[in-house]
Image (cartoon, rainbow, N blue to C red; front, top):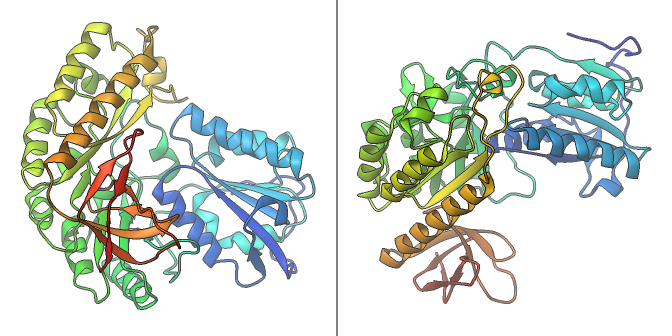
Length: 431
């Protein structure tokens, strides 16, 4: 544990009737961590719906790219300028690499690690600036809270950490090595959430596909969740190609499973994949994705453009390979050198128009997604979230044009695309 010289005892008197606003950056795992902190407020603090209402603001940061670091840092500075009386706390994956500097510069009141998030009520009550930075916990011990404020779907962290040391990634340092929650804890939490009306569950983690507890893998766990009364749909976070086994492929036929998998490829050039120190290669990825597509499932992936040595020829070849893959969704990242990673010291940096490459890929996958829906005759099943929209079983957002606002599950048989490529329902009915 690190402490600033001015840090007081965090166990002092609690502040009653004060309000805290949570700002979450990044992934689904961070959403879960924010809910964990909300559940740990112990009734001494109320949740604010906006920064202007808050006595304290907690920033749950992301550090997956330099841009992510910048976004969290700039937000902290903005809050300090606009709400100087508010107590600003900083946590998340960016705590270790920029929390100390923000604290030293007086831009935040305190910084703490992921592993300390259940102490949020004590941290909020600290009058003196503080720093509590600890290594990731060896065991995964998450509170089994039974509500998700402001959500119709529940995000469930099933594991934490990653044993893949990709050359460009620093997240495993913040999240630690892979470890999994006990299946009994997860099943109990989901059963209690289902009793409270939640019916869609998203299993998430740093490396979700690495889930393994007492011989139970991710597919085995999802199958048990699907048998819980009240569960209507189970979604999975990103998985690695090598983690998609026959159990998981067979599970896609289950009525409660989403008809979509997000499989992290990162690139389609074997040259670049080797430099990334990835474990997947294009030919085996193609075989795997075609097998999943044959089950009428949508497939998403991640792709990093501008990685060192990605010459024009290598990119053009990778782009042609992307055309062969049955993808429907994609997250595209511009390469961002992370301090302390092997990739940060690589030569042959890309100097061309990287954003043009990004736009080419975006347009390609958007067209593939549209073709998927034009071929598809399956009615769309949607859990409405807000503003009369929600995600279907293929992980696309569908907008329902009606007045007043609706809630719950609906089925859409007829739909079209607007000029922006969004799915618009022509009709719907409750299910």
